[in-house]
Image 1 (tube, rainbow, N blue to C red):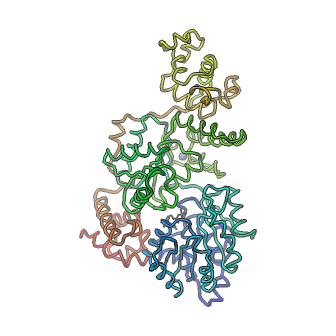
Image 2 (cartoon, helix red, strand yellow):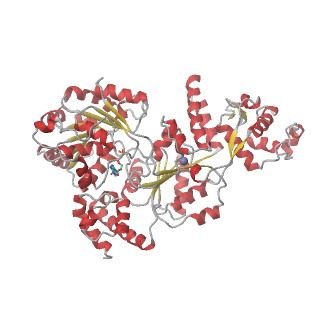
Image 3 (tube, rainbow, N blue to C red):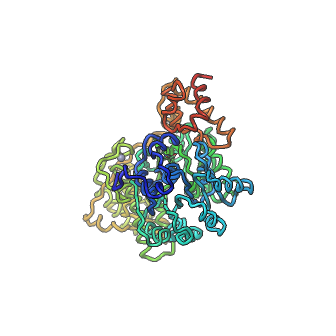
Length: 622
Ligand code: ADP
Ligand code: ZN
């Protein structure tokens, strides 16, 4: 625990109100069914309880919500939570309600009747958590009510939305800076997963008006997400095999274009996998319906562009597959972060090819930005490419990018699990560059590879490229190996594609140094991608990655069915009833009674009372 003191005496407010705080660990256990805080949660909660201005930066799935929910239960007061996303507010309210925490939301999609109920509960002092959109909070009416009600704190979720630097800037959020004037006595907390320094400064400036906010930054690591990055060989089979390996589990397949989204969804559907599509080109209602289904139903695969994901906090997404190279390390991390929020094992697979690299470079070059900006963007792309082509532990590279040092390899990435051979590729790279230079930097990789391998063809004859000194000097590598070498040279910015020309290759930033022998080129040997048939066989029948005995698996499936029925009856997503992990613990521990069941992960007092008996019955086989 950092500078905080776990045993600090109850803060002033608690004494003034004459009430004693509840024990936070007990609330965590009794209400949420969790046995310990996640890393980073306690210091934030402690500062919030002390009424200090807090900025908490936690990775997606780190458990931010608990940081503002728990203080209200400990202190028996109200947390007002500002959120930009209506779907998310509804989900959170459903979750809290199932756990027995009185919660409500005020937003533009409420019916007058809903509003009336929420206001009544609010004024009776019954609500512990109120979710509200920024524009609703900032009305005179609402501010007036809150001045009387004196909430314990206002939590501003997705706080990066106040920053004009960020990609999610919302003018309504900027107006939240007026909260200091309107409700000067209510402590504010800001929470976000976006961490860069400029955004942080902006949040503190705008939301805490220069006040010294306590900033807590949790580690970025998400150790339960297994990381794999593979060059594209046969993308369809690669995606299919990956999705099949997670049969029955919910997952996302990110594709770079609308067309690819539709193709991927169709391919999966044709294989009997329940897949949906989501992209900005679809009619709004269809898109929303697919998102709702993905959240509400068990085990759907969403094929989507990056438009999908913000505000989806489904905790049991088991995999994220990048069908194409993502835009940057930041977006990659944000996108894979949507997997495994529940802390159970999850897997992220990224596929990339030479065409992806070319496309990203071309986008930068044709962006119309200043040369300086282009340089920075090429550099950022190079960092992503270094990660995808590295022979080292992926997690070490990823965390290093975010400024965190990890000393040991992680043991949970493709490089740690099946290390790749590294070879000195300097000579091969020089041969390739020389073939490129001698042909006038006008030809693409395939033509240059033919020259290097000494393959005669009509075109080569016509151009007299068989008379070049480089003709046939690269026979020691197969065509596939040369393609891999060229791709890795593109990733290392030794090669680029020529935008003006016709897709010919030209020297990249580091070509000169390589040709002059001043820079070594280290290559990794691409791991063999299994044949389509083998990939198909590999797709085993385990659902969502957990290993259960046959008997336990049968019980688990029975519990899942019961959960689906109960969820449908209540109109909530299944995970609101119990998480997969909870069901798995039930299936393996087979608690004999309610007491034993209450000790399992995620089983709080209210859920035990409401759902426990039915699940006990199902465990008995009824
Ligand atoms: P985010 O930081 O992305 O908003 P959430 O608040 O949605 O994350 O939490 C992610 C998941 O982790 C939720 O399912 C939540 O119930 C669970 N969680 C939060 N805190 C704990 C804890 N201390 N122990 C176990 N699970 C937790
Ligand atoms: Zn690793």
